[in-house]
Every structure is written in C-alpha cells, then in structure tokens.
Length: 434
Ligand code: GCU
Image (cartoon, rainbow, N blue to C red; front, side, top):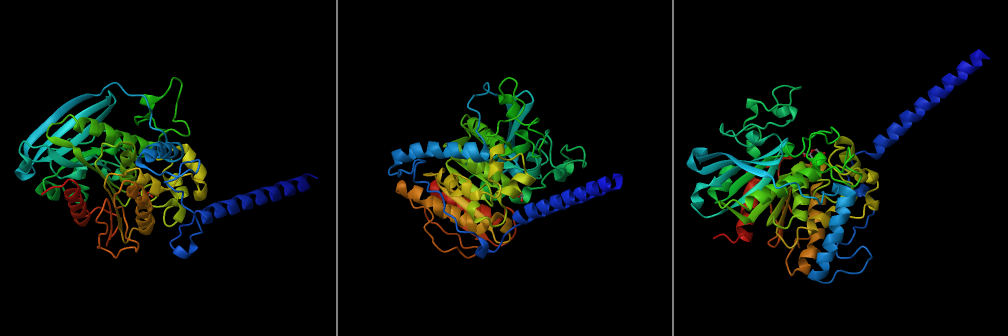
C-alpha cells in the first residue's frame, strides 16, 4: 500500500513537471520572435478618426475631443495615467555656467529642478554662442547613462542617481564612474547642432526613475501616492510615464530661460527614450516637433504586426516600463483598443519624424513606417501632408516633404550623425530658418 502510494505520488509529480515543462515551452513558443511578414495574422487597425462609439471624426474640433479619448485609452491601457495632481512648484537652481564650453562654441549650463528633496532632476544644456542674445531653438532628450555620458566635456556634473552597469564604477555600486564620461557621446552630435544654430538640452532618465524594477521605490511615483498607497494602480504610470513627465518638467524650465526659444523645442528620443518622447509629445502640446529614433514596440511600431519585439517581450523583460494593465495584452494585440499609429497621430498637427535602422529588425522598421503612414489621415484633417509615400523607402532615402518624415538608414540600432543631419534639416524646414 505504502509502495503504491509512493508510486502514485511519483507519477503525479512527474506528470506535473511534464505539464509545467510543456506550458513553459508553449509560453516560449508563443512569445517567439517573428521576422517573416508572411506569418503576420490578418489584423485591423483601430481608426484614429472614429470616436470610441464609432461615429466619425470630421473636423479639427471633433479631433480635439477624439484626442482626449485616445489619450485616455493610451493612459489606461499602455503607459498608465500621469497623476493629475501637481507637485509643489519645484525649486530651480542654476548650478554651473561655462560660457566657453566645447572650444568656445557653446555655453554650458547646468540647472537642477528639485522635484522633491530626494529627486533632483539635473538639466544639462549646451547653447550655441553664435546665437548671441537671441533665444536658441533646442533639441531636448533623455539620456540613458547620466549627463556625463553624453559628452566627454570634463565640466559636466556626474549623475548622482543609480546608473546602469555600463556607466557604473562597479557591477554592484551603480554609481556613475569617471570612465563613463562621453560613453554615449557618439549618439549626441552636439557639434552639428551648435554649428547649425541649435542647442542641446538633456536629462538623465534615472533622475526620474532608474531603469530597473524595484517596485517604483526610487522613482518619482511615490511622490504622488494617495495615503496608504504602496505602488501604482494597474492603470497608473510606470517608468516610461515618469520619464515622459520629466520631459514636461524640463519644458517648464525651458519656458523660463530667456536663452531658449521655448516655442522651438524639438523633442527627441532613441529607443526606450523614444517611447517616452512620443508619450510626452502626445500629452504635452508645447513640444513643437517630436522625433522618434528607433522607438520600436511601445513606440512608433504597430503592435498588431507582431514583427520583432512584441508586447509580451516588452512586459516580460521590462515589467516596470508600462502600466500593469498592459500585461493583459500580452499575445492579445488585437484586444488592445489602440495601436501605435494613434500615438503618432496625437502629435498632429505638429511635425513628426520617425526613423529606423536597417539592422534593427527587433524594432520592426516597416512597422514604424506603417505607423507613421497610418497617422497621416489625422494630419490631413488639419489640411497638412503627413507621410503620403506608399512604398517602403530604400535605405538612406528620407521620405516625406510634409509634416511627417521618415527614414531607414543603414546600420544598427543607434543614433548616428546621419540621423542628426536629417533631424536638423527637418527642424530647419519647420522652424523656418533661413
Ligand atoms: C530593448 C527593448 C526595446 C528598447 C531597447 C532600447 O531592446 O526590447 O524595446 O527600445 O531595448 O531602449 O535600446
């Protein structure tokens, strides 16, 4: 009897372990990465120009209401809601000014916006000295590793918040290392910006919320908790939402700085920072141009194509980026009430640039192009030309002479001088520079 019992128990355990292996295998195969267009199931994109109740959006006035609906859908299902309540007005402190930075071409200015006594957001600016006393147009973007990583300039104050291993002193310290100065400089072509009369403004994303999942303890989210709340609710913001919030707070500062033309701020973001830039640009109409550099899934790429990275990959590798509810759409792209072309449409009528890289298949370049295309009817509603090109362009052949531009360049997932040259041309066109 005892032996029979143990035999049954063993069989049962074996069966259970087989079951768990097969469910894991199933989960893995379902989350498999698809690169073959032929394997995309038929899908229908939601129509940005139809209200939730299916009535058509016929005018710019209608769009204003539809915009509110779409913002809510993205907030509740994807990025999480940005808190309505305002923090006390942050104290702003200019911590350094160097008028002869970068060989005399720029004025380097560092400003700390104290979101709370524990959350200093450090804004690094390079403004073109060629502008004289004229306010300069600028590019604003979040960086990955700390402001010191965006340029080898030894005068930049080191990040004080947690930084990723690549920029840290040691694997365990997560404190910015001297050696991280200029780590990412190749992605910030500040010389090109300055020589064409633009400034650069950048903020380290980790000042808003360090990029790892700690249950939002070290980010700005707790500053907004209701009493007794210990984590964001399922439809409240995650890390990308906090990053986007920081971009708007940087904009608040720029509006007060006479050296900056706050009506000419082009918001830029690469990859995960591109997702944040698009979400910030969608919510905050003060950004005059929005640029998505290889923002991929959760950015400019259509989720329903399921090519390259998918929602399930995003949510399993970066569980902190989006709201919890977004996880309910893992492998259920069709159930999502929005798709990313509608996020791009929320930039309208402002100029939008979407860019991809040929070897960055994970971001689904064609899905990014199609996202920009499918946002275009909203620009047309404003009487503006969106991305009317129908064929996917050849590499290094930028398209779109109107309010939406697109390019796919040769090379890998990165930001290169080629990309910046295109963004500068685009900004010149729309900021009507002579
Ligand atoms: C990962 C992630 C992408 C993201 C990218 C980046 O590859 O899967 O969604 O865009 O990192 O930020 O570099």
